[in-house]
Length: 227
Image (cartoon, rainbow, N blue to C red; front, side, top):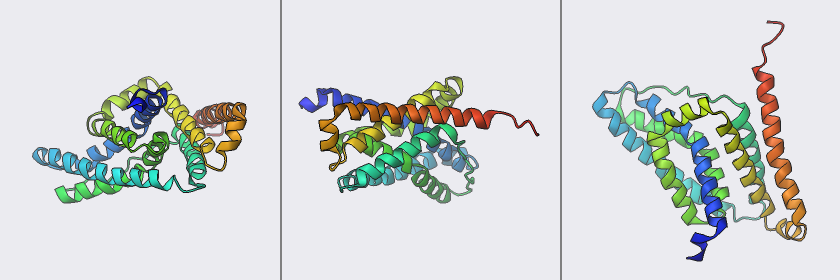
């Protein structure tokens, strides 16, 4: 019970909420695109069954990743991958080229497949932020359900109006990545003895991701003089 009131628990839960906000919104767009050509009475069914199927698959994947991260070396690999995901969040434009479907079954299948493919970054990030706690995984998934179903429009408007949200999300992802790296079993004793290196790595990774991401985004945003 003490764990529920520990700063580590609440900071991890807050990280999961932020991760869901910046990574789960795009999955909601998939649902809307896949169902938009169906009759109105079928669209609610598609949203319900498509979301339910996607959440079940994501739950199993997240729990599997939590278990896999117990294997020596995979926490380090997962952390490095999460650094790359944080960087891509800042510099990549998301492609929502999802085909609309004319039947309920086909639309549900499209949603589940697309969400599984698009949600892999979310799965890794949530599993990393949960630090092996299945309770945090479940809470994270419960939080992500309303975000995926109802929150996409609001989130996209927020991001368009306040681009700093994406930078906050990327920073949280990079911070989660460094926690995964320093908690890797064969590295943890070294960072425990040299706590200053842990903070140095955190600052370097988070600062590096945000700085390089901003520089790359500014570079791609500049008009080509030769055009």
